[in-house]
Length: 211
Length: 141
Image 1: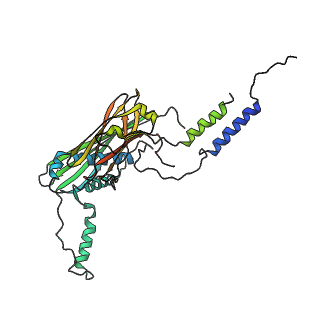
Image 2: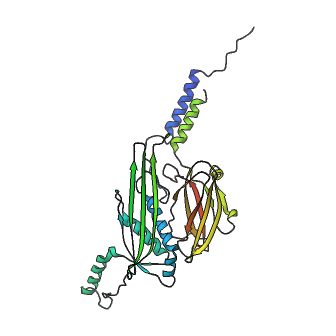
Image 3: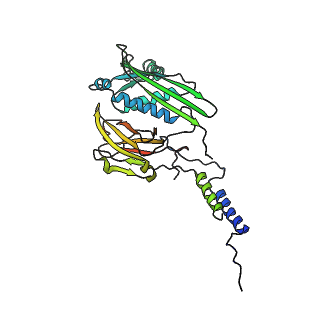
């Protein structure tokens, strides 16, 4: 007696079983819409959006510091002494709000750590004056330990710069170009002893695939 | 057909998990014999990218290096690199927060990555190169 062999097709029931397993695995995975807090790497490249971000700040600070430290003029300047520098400020000419003091803080910290420069901090002049006034005028302080006025040293060089941007966009694409320029001026002669610039281009395009 | 649904679920899972690849290629404790110190932790990237040269010199009493990266791939690669500096005893230089820097390497192009020691004590370095993830690079494990 011949029997007719039917092809080994999965039944509808088996298919729905697979679907159920797949979907439940999906639900159990991290796809569920819940808040997760974790620590990231502060030094990693950050591409959250096109605005000036931590990666740009770190790149600008790192490249400017390296350029200044490797410059032949600075090599001569720092061969036998540690020049005293004051950081003026970075003029933010972009359309964004950028904490430019944060950029100068990073640059001055890295330069100070290199051991080749010394800095005076103009942002704390009022606090220093207040403290010296207290030490010299207040009866609470032993006069022999009070720091006298007129002993601070003056800066020899001024570090300053500009940050500008060009922004362009259409419905599919946005492009931003940042240019950061920095200069070191000899305060005695007024000569610009060192200057350099660094550029950043960031582009945002619509992704073809994406979740 | 019977594999379709589980396959779909697995592909969804991998996409949703979103844990970026953070391995790459590196040159460690670099000196003149850099070929011995090359490490390829990501073979896929290792096929497309080669560290072809390491040069060092002294500039203003600081160790100055350039590392040449060569693309072996026809399309642009979106990469990031980081130098880490060590003193003569092999200790990492404290307080030196060398950032990962973004880099676009065009098809079959060569590029020199410059690095300057942050202090005079920094004498050896490591360079790590990896791909930029479109998501934030996070180390959750």
